[in-house]
Length: 256
Length: 256
Image 1: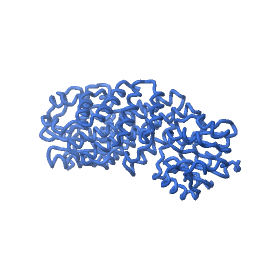
Image 2: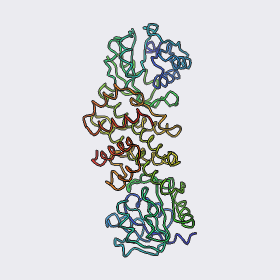
Image 3: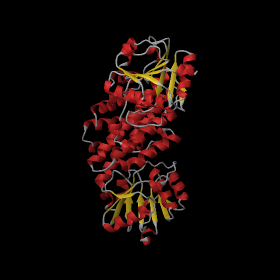
Image 4: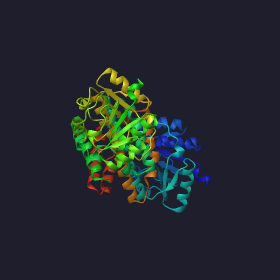
């Protein structure tokens, strides 16, 4: 098995590439090359990983045992049109199918970290859920073996399930985080800090470990308290915030 | 100071009344009377608190040292029109001003628990932030003293700040919880469990302890990844979910 892992190439230098690269490096693997169009972030990451930096596709190794493409979904089609490899090639995208890499190599797969990753925020990568998929049994075995050496939480997920997971993650993570941003903005205007709401946010999360979020719901929309809903709408001067308040409150009142 | 606390009356038997009543009872105070229009929940709560139950306003004590009105915002105006007391009267509403109780007594105030409370979910009340306000210094001192004996986290907050806190809490708690509900629904359709996303949800929360939610944001809308946004919209068959996805993604892209 170990022969499979002797030479890893990392494509990308953003949030996912950085966190994944560091986790692989810390697990004792050798990343020989980092490719990125962004020379600044690319060089920085390559240095941290003790890898060669390259910003030209033609210089990218084609014989690496594993090439991990961790670039934005928008950039992926162009890159996969230009890149060919003799080894296993995987992408890290939640919403891109397995087949997107079929032209890059005979061996391809997906290594999707189901976690919000920021280049500048440390994380215990061993607890990051990794969803794996590959084009055949042998490649899936190799990829699973590799994934298990950097995380305790690895599972096989097909492209349709992964797409649903990614969409669900946008709601559960990005959109809920945006609710915190709006909250922060409302409080700042009155000289208050989001810190005050942390016990409330913690409790919201604690509840859904034991019951469904739908049954745990509280607040004016769930109570159908129109008076408070009206009052809140009148307090929001930003028309975009009014719109967000309205569509979510309507949806809560309809019930899910 | 203790003379102030010899006799407490609780109005209401819903989520807030139940959790607050139990916390007061457990702190060793005597609640002599529970008033509620709902006889079933009212009697149950009165029994737990070893208090007399009453469902007629005319039987409500008018000489209690502290009367806590924990009823819905919609019901509060009618109740305060009909109730008079010689003691301190407080309500527990986030979005109702202090003045709403000015006719009930010469001594009035607010005791607002900034937490999502459910009658059937136990909570460590000593960590619930309590926001207090009163119509004069002496009443504020008494109320603060009382609040500190049931929670470690008490602060003075005026009516305008409290209204902003309540609005911010709706976004940070109710609306983020609704994002979890939607997430749960999307996953269920594919035979997956929300459990899979708990590390992601936990990390989303962990990040905002150290940085602003706005700077911690990730995902397709933050990256301006139109391809993924389009794909996600096409995956959502429910027009209400499409609308919610669109308004929040637009707002993230504009930046806050």
